[in-house]
Length: 78
Image 1 (tube, rainbow, N blue to C red):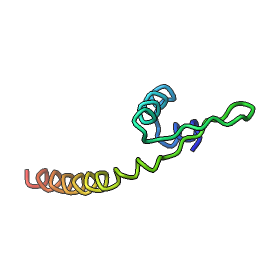
Image 2: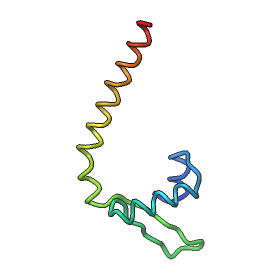
Image 3: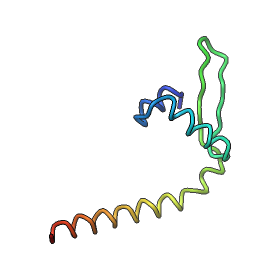
Image 4: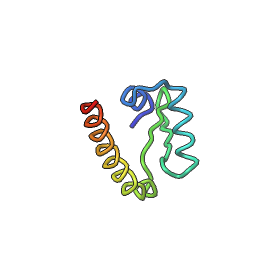
């Protein structure tokens, strides 16, 4: 995705997005590509290494769904 597209999709400011992408790049999770266009275009893509997180992310999503269900049920009982 291109930088501005990412910013709009994620709903975060360009400044925060830039900081987060820089940290992800330093940790080997995204690859930054500068294209020689006018104006200059920057694209970001996931690295192969980033896919090693898929199991963790799936587990966190499942936990979040169960937690939300538990919270909703607890609030109904009150």
